[in-house]
Length: 176
Image (cartoon, rainbow, N blue to C red; front, side, top):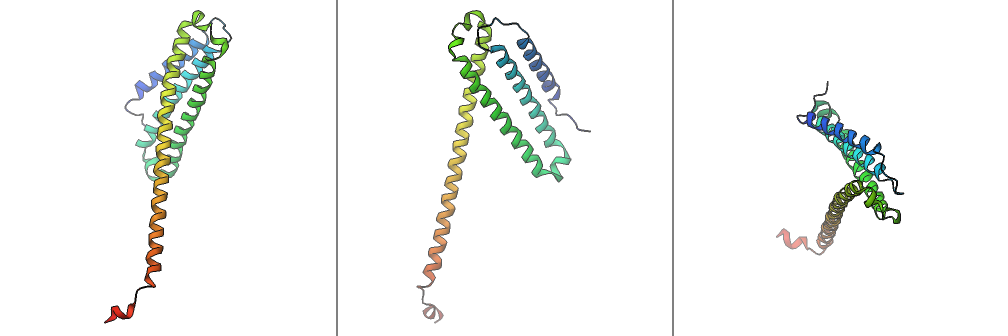
């Protein structure tokens, strides 16, 4: 039996609240302005609850002896894969939301659906900030990787120069 993480009760209620928010937004009966704002918000709330579920999964995997001893490689693959999947899904959804928010049909939506437009704007700002931070992190990782490759190449070249320089050494003079 898997033991829940210490924050499971908070996470569980957070998931329930995000799912209820998604359902309420989906069934709210927003005024039609040509842009599926309620659909975008409902799916975004589902993505947030998916993030909470993945966090709980990672916490349980970290505490489980099954994943700690026998299947460490699989645990890392699942955890890293779930993070990448979540980030890609959220990035795609935020980009779609940016297109919706900046669409010509959305110009009059703030008068009819002011609260929804404010919510979508807030989530888009948070999403863009997260994308920028994630992009900077990826660029930094690429920079570190390129620098390490360059240092290894220099070390290899230095080793080759040392081996080539051995032919110039007169060993008979060293023997005396």
